[in-house]
Image (cartoon, rainbow, N blue to C red; front, side):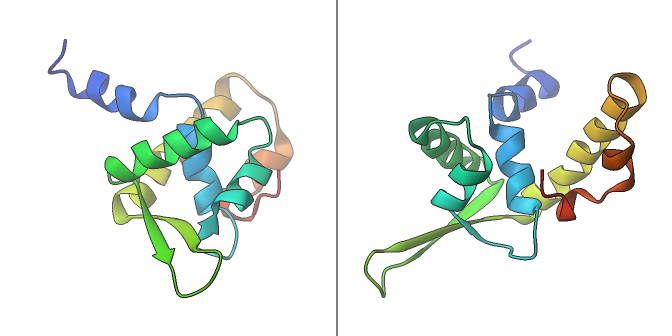
Length: 118
Protein backbone atom coordinates (compact mmCIF):
# COMPACT_ATOMS: atom_id res chain seq x y z
CA UNK A 1 0.00 0.00 0.00
CA UNK A 2 2.88 2.39 0.62
CA UNK A 3 3.43 2.73 -3.13
CA UNK A 4 -0.25 3.33 -3.95
CA UNK A 5 -0.65 6.71 -5.65
CA UNK A 6 -4.05 7.31 -4.07
CA UNK A 7 -2.76 6.65 -0.55
CA UNK A 8 0.19 8.95 -1.15
CA UNK A 9 -2.03 11.72 -2.53
CA UNK A 10 -4.55 11.43 0.32
CA UNK A 11 -1.67 11.61 2.78
CA UNK A 12 -0.82 15.03 1.32
CA UNK A 13 -4.25 16.60 0.82
CA UNK A 14 -6.31 14.58 3.30
CA UNK A 15 -5.14 16.49 6.34
CA UNK A 16 -7.70 18.70 8.03
CA UNK A 17 -7.88 22.19 6.48
CA UNK A 18 -5.73 21.42 3.42
CA UNK A 19 -8.58 21.42 0.89
CA UNK A 20 -10.19 24.45 2.54
CA UNK A 21 -6.91 26.39 2.33
CA UNK A 22 -6.57 25.57 -1.38
CA UNK A 23 -10.17 26.65 -1.97
CA UNK A 24 -9.67 29.94 -0.09
CA UNK A 25 -6.55 30.71 -2.13
CA UNK A 26 -8.65 30.15 -5.26
CA UNK A 27 -11.54 32.38 -4.19
CA UNK A 28 -11.81 36.05 -4.97
CA UNK A 29 -10.19 38.46 -7.36
CA UNK A 30 -6.77 38.51 -5.72
CA UNK A 31 -4.47 35.67 -6.58
CA UNK A 32 -2.41 36.17 -3.41
CA UNK A 33 -3.57 36.16 0.18
CA UNK A 34 -1.85 36.89 3.45
CA UNK A 35 -1.87 34.64 6.49
CA UNK A 36 -4.37 36.80 8.38
CA UNK A 37 -6.76 36.86 5.40
CA UNK A 38 -6.75 33.08 5.33
CA UNK A 39 -7.14 32.90 9.12
CA UNK A 40 -10.16 35.23 8.96
CA UNK A 41 -11.82 33.11 6.24
CA UNK A 42 -11.07 29.83 8.04
CA UNK A 43 -12.36 30.98 11.40
CA UNK A 44 -12.00 27.70 13.29
CA UNK A 45 -8.42 26.89 12.27
CA UNK A 46 -5.74 27.65 14.84
CA UNK A 47 -2.78 29.80 13.77
CA UNK A 48 -0.43 26.87 14.48
CA UNK A 49 -2.41 24.49 12.27
CA UNK A 50 -2.77 27.05 9.49
CA UNK A 51 0.96 27.72 9.55
CA UNK A 52 1.73 23.99 9.46
CA UNK A 53 -0.67 23.28 6.58
CA UNK A 54 0.64 26.22 4.55
CA UNK A 55 4.18 24.93 5.01
CA UNK A 56 3.16 21.39 4.00
CA UNK A 57 1.24 22.58 0.94
CA UNK A 58 4.21 24.70 -0.09
CA UNK A 59 6.62 21.76 0.34
CA UNK A 60 4.32 19.60 -1.81
CA UNK A 61 4.14 22.22 -4.57
CA UNK A 62 0.47 23.18 -4.24
CA UNK A 63 1.16 26.75 -3.13
CA UNK A 64 3.98 29.28 -3.22
CA UNK A 65 4.98 31.70 -0.54
CA UNK A 66 6.22 35.11 -1.63
CA UNK A 67 8.15 37.19 0.88
CA UNK A 68 8.46 40.96 0.53
CA UNK A 69 11.01 42.20 3.03
CA UNK A 70 11.15 45.71 1.58
CA UNK A 71 8.70 46.93 4.22
CA UNK A 72 8.18 46.51 7.94
CA UNK A 73 6.58 44.25 8.93
CA UNK A 74 7.73 41.73 6.35
CA UNK A 75 4.88 40.83 4.02
CA UNK A 76 4.25 37.16 3.19
CA UNK A 77 1.66 36.17 0.63
CA UNK A 78 0.45 32.77 -0.51
CA UNK A 79 -0.85 31.77 -3.93
CA UNK A 80 -1.63 28.63 -5.87
CA UNK A 81 0.99 27.07 -8.12
CA UNK A 82 0.05 25.53 -11.45
CA UNK A 83 -0.29 22.20 -9.63
CA UNK A 84 -2.54 23.79 -7.00
CA UNK A 85 -4.72 25.42 -9.64
CA UNK A 86 -5.09 22.12 -11.47
CA UNK A 87 -6.07 20.45 -8.20
CA UNK A 88 -9.05 22.83 -8.03
CA UNK A 89 -10.67 20.67 -10.74
CA UNK A 90 -10.70 17.84 -8.20
CA UNK A 91 -12.21 20.11 -5.55
CA UNK A 92 -14.93 21.12 -8.03
CA UNK A 93 -15.67 17.43 -8.61
CA UNK A 94 -15.95 16.94 -4.84
CA UNK A 95 -18.50 19.77 -4.84
CA UNK A 96 -20.47 18.12 -7.66
CA UNK A 97 -20.47 14.78 -5.83
CA UNK A 98 -21.60 16.42 -2.59
CA UNK A 99 -24.42 18.25 -4.34
CA UNK A 100 -25.58 15.10 -6.12
CA UNK A 101 -25.39 12.63 -3.25
CA UNK A 102 -25.32 14.44 0.09
CA UNK A 103 -26.33 18.08 0.23
CA UNK A 104 -29.23 19.82 -1.45
CA UNK A 105 -27.93 23.37 -1.87
CA UNK A 106 -29.40 25.20 -4.85
CA UNK A 107 -27.41 28.38 -4.18
CA UNK A 108 -24.13 26.48 -4.09
CA UNK A 109 -25.05 24.57 -7.22
CA UNK A 110 -25.68 27.81 -9.13
CA UNK A 111 -22.61 29.65 -7.85
CA UNK A 112 -19.01 29.74 -8.98
CA UNK A 113 -16.70 28.80 -6.10
CA UNK A 114 -14.28 31.54 -7.12
CA UNK A 115 -16.97 34.13 -6.34
CA UNK A 116 -18.36 32.42 -3.23
CA UNK A 117 -18.36 34.54 -0.09
CA UNK A 118 -19.27 31.71 2.29
